[in-house]
Each structure stands twice: as C-alpha cells, then as structure tokens.
Image (tube, rainbow, N blue to C red; front, side, top):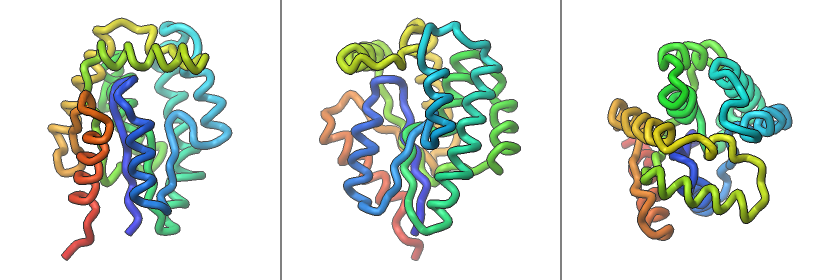
Length: 209
C-alpha cells in the first residue's frame, strides 16, 4: 500500500540519515525533499536557504515555500502515490508551520488555508518528528555546512530562540494529532533512532485487518 511519510525536525536532527534508513527498509520508496524535489523547487531552494536570515520578508518566504510545494506535490508526490509507491519526504507542511509559523510569526491558520488551496490539503500518513535540543542541532548543522561548503545556512544564522520556537511547534503538532505523528529522541545513537523510526513506521503502516 502506498504511504506518504514525512521526516521533520530542527536543523541538525538527522533527517537525512532517517530518510536513508526508511528507503533501505522500503526499497521501492521514492525519497524527496523540501524545498526542492523538482527543478523549479530546487531553484527556489537556492533562494530560500542561502544568504542571511533576514533576506526575505516572512510572507515572501511563505509564498515561495508554498510555490515549491505546489510543483513538488503535482509533479512528484501525487503521481508516485497514484502509482502505488511510498513517498518519503525530508520536510513537508510541518516545517512550514514550524519555521514560517512559530519561527517567523506567521498565522498557522493562514498557512493551513494556503496549503489546502494550493495542493488540496494533502497530508502525510505519518510524520516522524526527530526531537533534539536546538543548541545541539545547530552545532551539528553548522559543522556539516562548513565541512561540505554548502551555502544553505540562512536558517542556521538565526538565533537559538527562533529554533526553540521551531522545536516546540513540532512537538505541539505531534501532540495535537498523535495518530499521525511519532516523536523520536534524535539525541540517541543513529542506529537506535533508525530502529525506533522503523518501529513507528511498522505500527502506522501495517495493513488493516
């Protein structure tokens, strides 16, 4: 059965490794990311993630994120699900609610309404929330960006208070819809995190009886 799985968390929480672990467990799964996933989305990703934290007005940021998602859903996610494939996305609506909502102060109702209008309200069957102390996550992420010489550190340039709001938003989202979320302690060893993620996936996505 095709499932839509999103992996969410603050920067540096280990989303890439978790997406890889899920893909290994579900060989036919399509892995993708936001912003990105399409040529159009990748170009917007360059605009959204490079530069300093104040480069864009919050509304401009929200609209660009949504534009990237429209292309992503219509060109990648929806066709794959319709073809019976499981889709695993590194970030989805949860990130918009956390970063542009709680982080930037945009109204959550506006974000959800825009999502409904733009992509028909599609939501993941399961959202994995990788929970981590923001100070640890920022340290990890900044080291990775420096080591890889990647200019995608615009959000990492924002202060700890911003990332604390983002973390709390993820937890609030999970607590408000526990049937569609699984919170995983991302401070654990990577192999433990992967085991817990796969257990949550099995519990969510087992065939109905």
